[in-house]
Length: 324
Image (cartoon, rainbow, N blue to C red; front, side, top):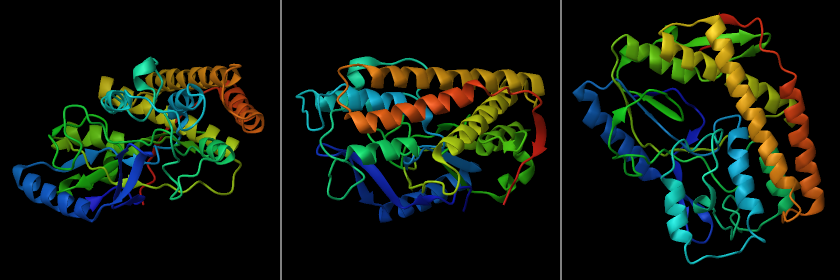
């Protein structure tokens, strides 16, 4: 087996009444992965793609509004509800756990907070909450594998994969193809979502790629060096370029600069709209955020939104993917 990802651990996050989520050592996950390979490799499946738990794909701006909904719709961490189990179950059934760029599904997704899931002590620190949000790390909603139409285990029901992401496991060498990766370049920024373009192109050439629930823990470390605002803006642009590219590949069967530019602009506009909604939530007078952490987060969101609004995605170029 080969994996296209290097930033995962054999651990997993699972729902927890006390913490919302808890981290579980996953030695059994390696065994499940091996059994998946032994079961499905001989059946002609070339690769498995699945979600991840823990850190969301960078950038995590798309997760921000739903996390702020959790944080601002409760008087304070520790609020409990008799309907907690039902609401958590409703949330886990939702589609697209990575990005919140469409509609707000409202009260049924509310998730009361009792402890910080990422801390062993469970201690809740607002300054740390803001720090994690600024760095693109999850607070209330870790990215989890999609549970639609499959049980939440690596034994899960397989379906055809159209968009790759999270974890990608190759079972046969014929999909070890660097040429299947396609990227768009805009200035010094290269598009993300290379695993998705790889998935689309491999399937066009006859490869069988299936979706499986492989909830390995991604524990992505914050990027060092550049300021958080600069890194966030760059990653958001790279992600928009990648989305525009894979949508074009899926629709036209080929890369097209103009169609990719239109798709990237739509994606970036959706991110900016998402940031505006998050800012409005923080500005509401009933928000439980303490003044200083709230001011810091508001300043960051406005700064990022302003920078993204000024981005003009013109002059993009098809470029060779950087494959290590």
